[in-house]
Structures are given as C-alpha cells and as structure tokens.
Image (cartoon, rainbow, N blue to C red; front, side, top):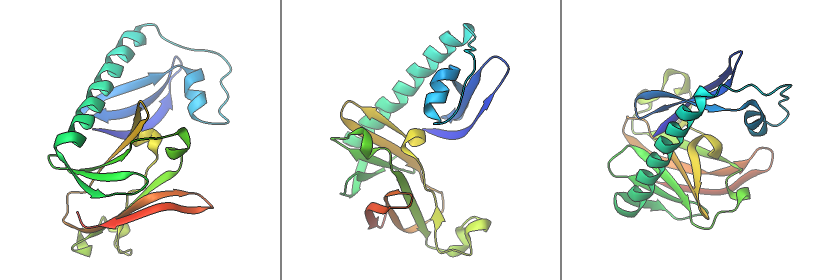
Length: 185
C-alpha cells in the first residue's frame, strides 16, 4: 500500500514522494512528465539525472508488485461491501477499502472519491474532526488508484478505530455526487 506524502523539486529534478509498505521511496518524474500531471505548470528546461533511471525502474517494479497483490486480494481475500459504479471491497487482511470498476474509461477515474467514516465512538475521531460526525478521507484516483487493462482499481486505508458505517462515492466539484453507497464494514 502506498500513501501520498507530497511533491517537491531540487535543482536537478522534480519528484513525487510516496511511502511504500513502511519503506520511504521516491517516485521521480522528468519535469515535463510532472508538468503533464499538474495542468498549468510550466517547465522551462528539461532536467533529469541519469542515475535516477535505474532507481525509477526498480520503483516501477515495486509499484507493479503492489498492484498485483491488490488484484489478487480482490479475488480471494476481499469481501464485497457495495455494488455501484465502483464495487467496494474490504480487504480481509489489511484495514483498507478497494474500489473496482471492471469496464473503466478515463472519465470514470477523474471525479474525486469521497469517503466518510462514521466511528462507533465520536471521541475516536482526530481532534480536528470531532466537531463533525464523521472522518473525511476524500481522495483522488491519481494518488490512490491504477488502471489494469480496462479495469480501474483504487485503494484507501481505513483508520484503526472501530467503524459504525461508511459513506462513499464519487463527485465532481460544483456538479455534485455521481454515485454514493453507504454500508457497515
């Protein structure tokens, strides 16, 4: 599983950083590739260190292995919680949700996912969320998902506290919700 940490730049490179299974790894993009990820970003010149290529290839292989494990989990170690535009599974071995859409076009992965976690005990919420009734773990497919052929898969870790119910779905800013599901984990 990976968690988005942030992005940054050095004099010689632009990078995105994730944490993979308790190991700190850098996934590095050439500036023009990075610019393509962030609309409106301008890159004046191409900067790239050649030694990053082999590290980047190893990281791509690591990412692919993580994806393969997630795809295997869907088939044997996941429980279906909800059917909707994206089917939602609970990983039986890890505390996470897996979103799957079998026939997925690019437009299906663009809207943001909302994920509202309602704890059994409101005191379990992080301090900044206690005035609300749920924890907000909204996310973007770009940071939490991948394409496997025609299939889209997104993974989102769940908090460690006991959960009473979950409300999730996708929405487009300013247009509203596209689909929603509510269930007990």
